[in-house]
Image (tube, rainbow, N blue to C red; front, side):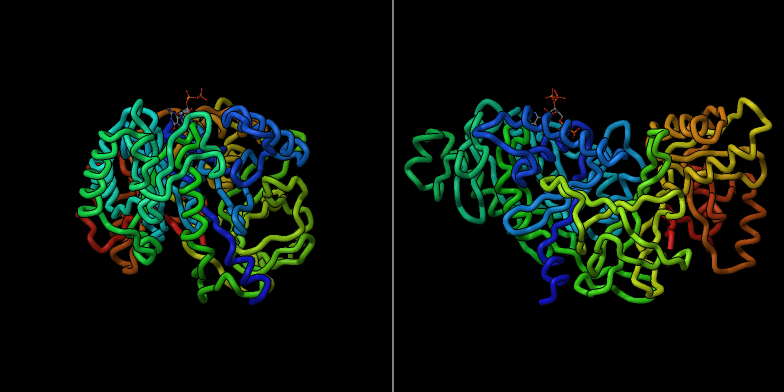
Length: 528
Ligand code: G4P
């Protein structure tokens, strides 16, 4: 096997999808601990060690002169290289969160046992559906009272439309939590608060029948678990690798992130079963990860908020070949040769800027606005990766200028900000308004701040009657013209010049769709 093929085969590139507060950050910290990203002396309390990790990470960012706040975390585990791509979640939720999911090979869904499937998880899951991304599930906070596990699996199946295959099963919950049973290996992992840090630090019995189990959890709970398992094994699906890889079935794990319980079985299963980088579609052909020539695409652009460093970092997912520091690449959209001299890599354990990257890895490329979302890099071949869309914004505001003479700067600023992909900018056909769309509310504050700071424009953003946006496509030129005339009041163009329908209400959108059956209303727009 070539170096590229074998390095690709051991990569596991994924993201965590969850609703805020389900425990994504906590679980991330635990996973990094397993990866040895943080040096541990003896038994360190998880959270404390993790705080230390965060500050180390920030120091690293300072050193590199740019904020890449845990955008990508890479760590080795059991002979594999795991790349965890961050999905900004709380106030920083935005279109980038969605687009990160186009750059991963699989996802891990974290669900709060008490809250079940929540709204943001549903949205993120819809994005995973676009590419049938394989998903594993971690049901978190088992140390608290929550929903009955069987009901919870039903909920996941019915709300998210994905089959569940429990791989671990909880023994008790909340105050009564005693452990988990591994349904594939049969092992019983005892829950011992303050321990469970690693396998070595845990009590593990080979099976439920081991006399030690009855002694540890008591005959009553043991009988309950046996009954439950009978029910579960009768009613649920056994793990099926093919169904998982097709995005049709999700293996499910139970545990408690903050107690680091149930995390190692999840990680062990993950590195073994989650997909390595697979072939990706381009405008001309499918590119296999094992190909020797470098290809990759840009899925995220992060501007530096530090005025001392006015550059941007473009995050490129490597799809094939090997990246070596200083190599020359071909920037397909501009047709220019670009030397990738000081690209960033994101190795959590190795503080050096690494010299190479392989399929599944992400590198950060410094630039001054020449690189856009969706751009492809190659070693000369003209091809563009597909499946890196813009997503219809969910929030809209009208830009209001303090100084009307600065309209030009405002337009330029909004257009450039929208190239970075966190916000989108629309010009209605029938008015002089400038409308900004985003999927997270913080983006409007960031836009206002940056317009002032970088373009010298004081603007505020006020509410506007737009509920949702759809890109318009119609192959029949006559029908399209007819549609444009009839709907001019609701039509606008985005920064790329594409036609967009801005619907004042969801009902209006539905009616418009019914009235124009020949016209497609698209919730995503391809960059390529
Ligand atoms: P997020 O990134 O998904 O938003 O969630 P995060 O990890 O920040 O966790 C949200 C809260 O849930 C945190 O509490 C965290 O400690 C807690 N949590 C995470 N995993 C578990 C678990 O397994 N059991 C229990 N009981 N709680 C858990 P917080 O009070 O907001 O923060 P902190 O003061 O604990 O840091």
